[in-house]
Figure (cartoon, rainbow, N blue to C red):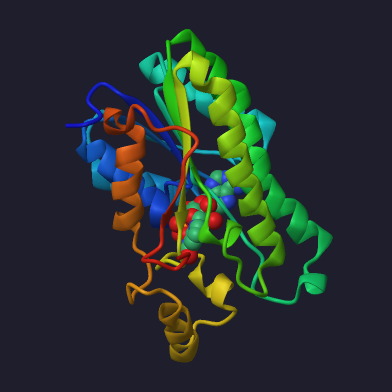
Length: 249
Ligand SMILES: NC(=O)c1ccc[n+]([C@@H]2O[C@H](COP(=O)([O-])OP(=O)(O)OC[C@H]3O[C@@H](n4cnc5c(N)ncnc54)[C@H](O)[C@@H]3O)[C@@H](O)[C@H]2O)c1
């Protein structure tokens, strides 16, 4: 049990990578707070985990009020927050950059980037008081090896990578570690948007760009997240690690 007595908050925990990460953390003994804009999805994951050590709440990670409430929920229920996983994310459908609307741009930066600012605002003071903590941001290979048609999504993930390193250097003296994982295209709810259309041809085009020969899976991110959020990585901070089957080589 690598996370016994730890309290973890996972955003976007209702599906995909977030769900995989939350289930793995619960299996490793953590008390887990599942946050998702889709409450029903988060509640289904909570049911799957079962027991006293999980709660599901609704919240939009791009909204100040919601983020304050989600961090307070952890405090109220378990008295602390040890681990924060900023996983919730969104994208525009694959299309030429000039066709992305201002509304889509604002939403992408709200959910993917502003969320990290907001969660830090409320979680970092708690972690400092508690003598330390761990933050894991889910960035993307898109931030370092961009694909065409996803310009503003790629840009938002570049910002997540820079935020991760900047936060790590500022927070190290407080024993707060900040790392990121960069997943390659994965089998989740967002995949059809990245591909533009979910056809066998598009899938094989994406798979052929990954030397390991398959798309990523929630369990791949769950295993990497466990390493970064447990004491196994006590000396590791400011790292943005590809979990990408060699896509970025
Ligand atoms: N799937 C991929 O190919 C891929 C590749 C690289 C990075 N990522 C990143 O992985 C993360 C998880 O995405 P996923 O692939 O598991 O997709 P997903 O669609 O399966 O899961 C995303 C979850 O986030 C929730 N969410 C969306 N907006 C939210 C908001 N404003 N507030 C709270 N919750 C919100 C959704 O309801 C959903 O449950 C994202 O940050 C995404 O950018 C995905």
